[in-house]
Image (cartoon, rainbow, N blue to C red; front, side, top):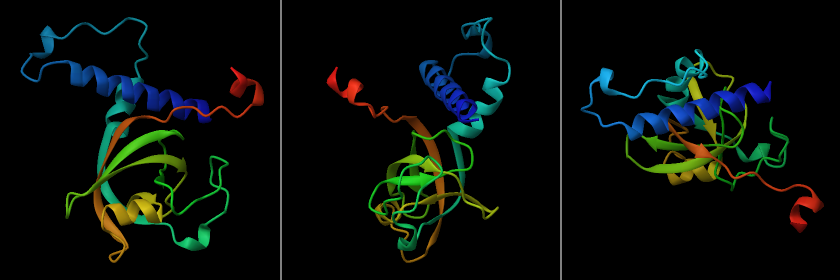
Length: 159
């Protein structure tokens, strides 16, 4: 199932990069034709993963050290977030709509379980966008890339 999330995030990134490469004033007919091998469902999923707005909260310190859905331990001092569908490792720019402060975080967990929220931030990320006092903030989420893969094996580190 994580392979599906990675494929969706990769399609979203490819879609956003191709959208940025086209001039805004170019008519739709002037755009280069899509490759025949491109999956039909990828562009439909891409806009939702590319940018969205909604409410976020942040994890309390009581979750420090617990395993996240990605398998890593939660660190309240890391710049991370939980998201319902973005692939683990996806880098997301989170902008507080009230004060325009932004932070780039990495998705490492699933959530939130509250239906009216689009994500949960670590305490460090919440602090960077100035939402610690309010606890919940209206934000804009923008996918900006994927985190660099980490080498976990000794053989990979020797290369």
